[in-house]
Image (cartoon, rainbow over all chains, first blue to last red):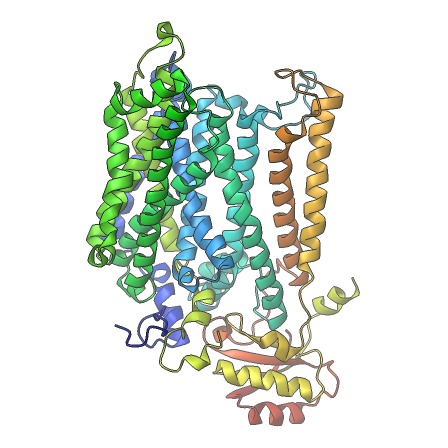
Length: 458
Length: 180
């Protein structure tokens, strides 16, 4: 494709003018939804309503409807919570970390990836709140002066660190995402054909004008938020892994957990980005010029690399279990691979370590159907990773009299499936309300890799 | 603190509309060289080199971020110290009451939270946002056109002079703006 290897690959295909870019990206927001979108939305919305009903039943009847019991006290709620928080991490990686590394290809996917983060964290946040068993008392999680002593929360508990980490992460990601949206909302306001649209987007754009002074402050703030989000995102999954690692259970009490969890989170999150971007490319064909095959290929490379990283972590856990000489630790890992839950372990290994390896071949990396299927497998595999970590360590304790199985119930299935309804409902609505690609950010990079590259000034 | 009051008052002036990024940057240089100091350039996206062209100083937001981050860190330390050491000390696994390593996650998160939110607050302050229905020079300035706006209280303001200068610099349209 490129005769000169030093030439950069164009980030935006086709010789677009500034106006065309605005028109292309605003189109989904300003037109009647297609039948495909309607079909997906109806499906997702139905699942979402089903989810709300399931939660209502579980909350009103009690946690006993779910399979958690002695000895497996952490189940679907915690597994799926970790799964969704992990999904969110790729969004911040794309929007913040790749921004700091000046990876310009991130521009076209950053908006939707960041939206994915916000919605995934929203979906995740519900689980621990229900898992407390009495969600109407969840405000006890926050330290506020109260009439019970005042009895404060335990600041030495990783579960409380999690409250702070997740709520900070949700707040900062939402703010970061919204700050990125402001100039584009002003664009939508100025394009508005009717009064209601003008008022709504006018209010949302907060009176943005785009003067050089404003842009100067804005770019500085964007850099700062990216800089703050970078350690934040690493801290969040580190703290999520502390929920496990700080306890004294074999299979959990391990120093590899923080990096292992962060790598897994980025792995699963990129898979979800690929799932969503493939659908967006199909749903909005004009986006193919912005979210190009080259962008998808780069993300597939990251999936392959992080897949190898989690594979390395799986291997090193076994090595350390053997090397530690600790009987309980050795038993837990042999039990994972060959015990009653071996099927879940091998689903995890197959989906996370082996299947992504087909991306070594360039044609597969650049094929939308292949990457879509692989991304689904990775999502399944990463859910099973959290299942393996949570359930297999709990179901075989130190004493055989404490052993038992996880009594998976239909409510567990309903909660798990329903959470996808919530996520996709919000994401599909987002695609119709906000520009799914950053208009103001894509314009400065539109000349990268074009014939007269000297114009781009980068 | 003196400056925002100056900015909040809406002013009339002259605006030149440009169609090309390179022209508007050159124009900003020339306008500044001609002695104008209060002019501003409006663009749909941040332009590389525009800050230099307009002579805009580096944003002061990082100082706010740093101060807010330090405040968040100390506030978090105060919170955990007061609750866990002073107000209701609880012995958790024989750890000392002031068990600093266990408090670091809370302190880190609150540092980031305060720093991020206060930086956003600083942006809103500098850009005088939120604002209901800001004046618009041209609806395409958030899409594909660029503008240079010179307020009427700027040094050496003269309608004919500005009209001539902006047209020479490549403005496709120069118009009088009642308020901006």
